[in-house]
Image 1 (tube, helix red, strand yellow):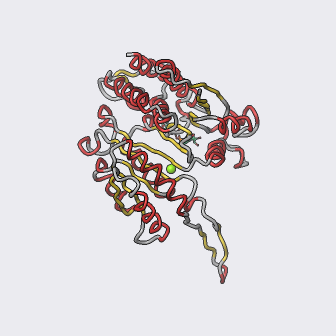
Image 2 (cartoon, helix red, strand yellow):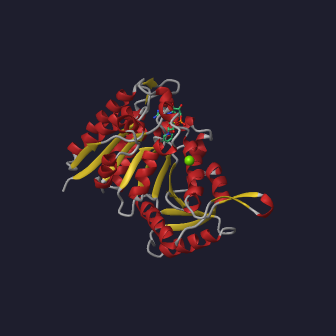
Image 3 (cartoon, protein in one colour):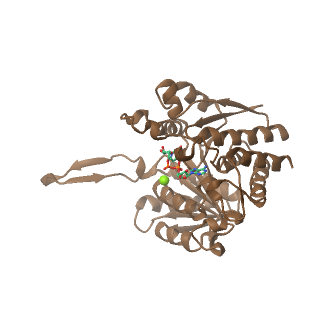
Length: 360
Ligand code: NAI
Ligand code: MG
């Protein structure tokens, strides 16, 4: 049976980088007879321009029907002046996430040895880093009720939010993390604040419970403050980390910056069935849009994640990742990862090089 991939180029550099990722996906589709079919739709600013809203009905329908979604990026100064927050480009993304229940956010932080100089840490500490942060994306304190700003007795205002996870929410993100660890280095570190927050006492209990189902995965626990320290002290001690929405937001951005290469980082957001939306971690980079300067590798690596996590084609994912490493070995660099002695290439030339490496 064929599988449908929805392609959402979006705004800014989105269309340029997605074009290269699509070439890679089309090539492996043909090479390995994956039986993928492609649909394309508008989202974000591009959809606002065409239809007046960031997530048209047709796009949401297509997203629901698809087996996996590839997204470029949305947003840009053109739409920043829109006063109504509901018709901002970002709402297109958030709308897909919430409508599809994409609760499992996978954020790898990989530092290719060829790019070790890009990190702010010493090469010996960070070169070859390959960790995966699994962040719960649809619950926790960012969504908990009640929330707001209220007036206390005496007229003093107080802001409040609610940090809540039920055991089913914890179990399903735990499962995503254990499954990912099983496919990788078989080590999972669950990050919490169980010395202070009851929510995370339950979190820890559920993770321990799940561990019984995954005897091949070694589970450890760490308080979030220590995890932040360890990430910058000795990041290679980790394989997979799993944590709630807020801790994950912060830790995954910190881990991403260890690599120093925003143009290299893919991400995935999964639902309970493993269907997902895949996108680079970076935004629409309006400052370089339309100039052929954008690095398409984060989007190409997002395609690899799509094959691994949603389309059950892990071997093909490995081949794409190897092809990316190969083009770095050929000293080809887009401007964002340029250094002395390397050859600057455009977005399309980088795509050409990955395609050539895959053809072998
Ligand atoms: P950004 O990630 O778009 O850009 C930050 C810096 O990194 C810029 O200097 C940019 O040129 C560079 N950069 C980003 N991706 C690159 C690539 N592939 N190759 C080479 N250089 C790259 O973040 P910024 O500037 O904060 O946001 C720009 C727009 O993107 C805003 O409208 C923002 O709302 C939107 N955005 C969208 C996201 C999404 O669609 N998931 C995520 C983050 C921001
Ligand atoms: Mg963030």
